[in-house]
Length: 521
Image 1 (cartoon, one colour):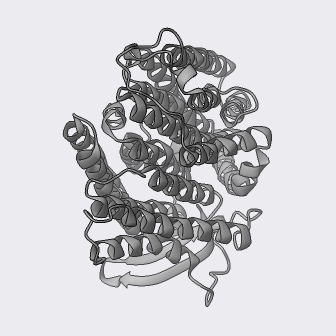
Image 2 (image 1 turned 45 degrees about the vertical axis):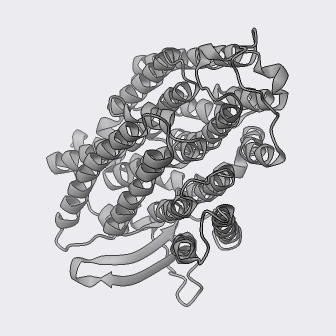
Image 3 (image 1 turned 180 degrees about the horizontal axis):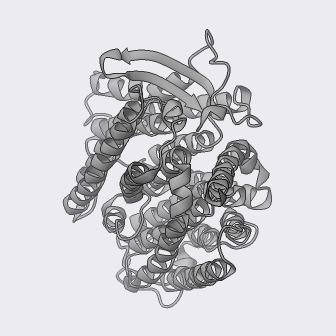
């Protein structure tokens, strides 16, 4: 996000669309608690209000990105800057580029679908849907913030609703899972804050503006320490091994709508922040540590896949699968070229859709069987043929079946690795070989789970089941259809971010050339 990414026009005098996207859900969250309606009398009215606010918000996102966002430009667009607390340098500074635009749209879609998926929430519905709306605002603000302190406040704000959503509406071990989640992420946030403030104080003038911070030349030991602070801080959210252990517990105890948020959006915040901060603000350090990122990505891929085999809980198995798939994001970021970074972006979008679909369908048959234990299920395909078809489709997308978005993203990342001439041929070959083992393991643990859950003898103790309702079918298809569109027509996604990722890759290449010239001299 160097100087070449700053728009020459700030849309002064035009409508503040980005602020509306951020603040509209928060307005809904403030409205719900003051409604003169007792939640015992009509608990579903709060759900309908939340869905209304989120629907309008998502439609605004679609309108803004389709009408006002120029995908051919790598500039920061629709900039909004208002001095908020000048004494500490805090600005209400928003902007959107190709990296943030698709993730804002993904966030709006999945949050809306998670609210629709919360159809039967009757326990404290006022609080539940208020938290869901606050979460929506915080997520959008993370992707749109152009001020470090504003970004950090949004990053912290989204932790609180997730903690409460798990702790109050989760499973039997919900307090343990929620506490583990908040401890991991809160401690990681300290590293983010320290690294960001150190970077803001490092120049001749103090600034929190992300564009100004990215324009500074930060290398050497100081750059390395800041880079590692951000890597660990954001790596917890991605998550990277061994900072991932909160994820299976959180998914295992969260209800299906919250799992959709965790897998579909929160993990992507970690990947987005790595690109926004580590790659764009520390290009020289990133080039030096790129091989280490690739090694960590390989460990994520293999460890997550092997760990998935050990899980007898459907949601925990899918959660470990997410750890594996986020390893491909690290591979793409570490490849330091256009193909690799494009693949990382595609992988985040693709996994957000696929994982949200898998967790939602899992929650659907959990409502009908009251169990997530794989050994205690079987024969569901005959009773739930549509549910089986949707779960199998999302599993095939997850294992990167050709024609689906997972295949496009992962093959693009592999091409990025093989085309990186900065790595030795042996390193490239070993990376591809070991990563490919993860591709072999993924269909084994996913398809074996499908076989054990949906085929074989029917377990007599399972509850009486009924097929998916139209509402549930709508949610599932809203997530699966985009994976098919991206799989057959990747340009529908890549056209949005390609200009920005090309600029990032070109900036890395320029720093490589400068480093080489300095080495020769």
